[in-house]
Image 1 (cartoon, rainbow, N blue to C red):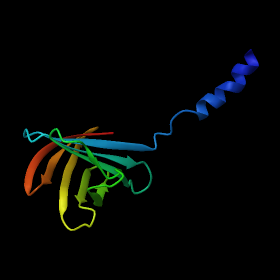
Image 2 (image 1 turned 90 degrees about the horizontal axis):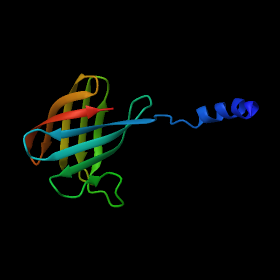
Image 3 (image 1 turned 30 degrees about the vertical axis):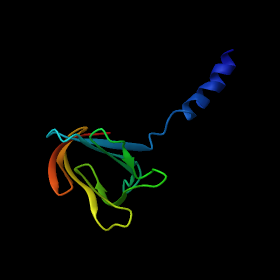
Image 4 (image 1 turned 30 degrees about the horizontal axis):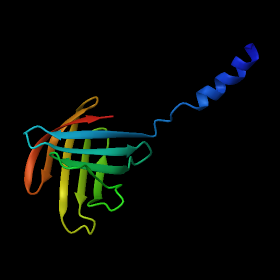
Length: 126
């Protein structure tokens, strides 16, 4: 029994999650009920792997949908700020632009521009 525990413990440690991704959720605070969220890779350059946009009670749109209605055209995410620009698939018009400054561990505030209207947002950052 003791040898099984001795051999099994290293295998258990190998099976733990790698925490290879993180993310953010930014919600408007002005009652407009818009949510932008994203999945961030935990590698050099921290690429934005996917973005999601929910407006009101409409279904959530994602860059990973089978036929995405928008694409990530620019993103910048570091320990100080989050900047994300989403555009239509042909990159002819912006669908949403997020600018948020990370103020505390796990929290950020900023703006989200959608349809030419600027909304204040509060974000949770993982």
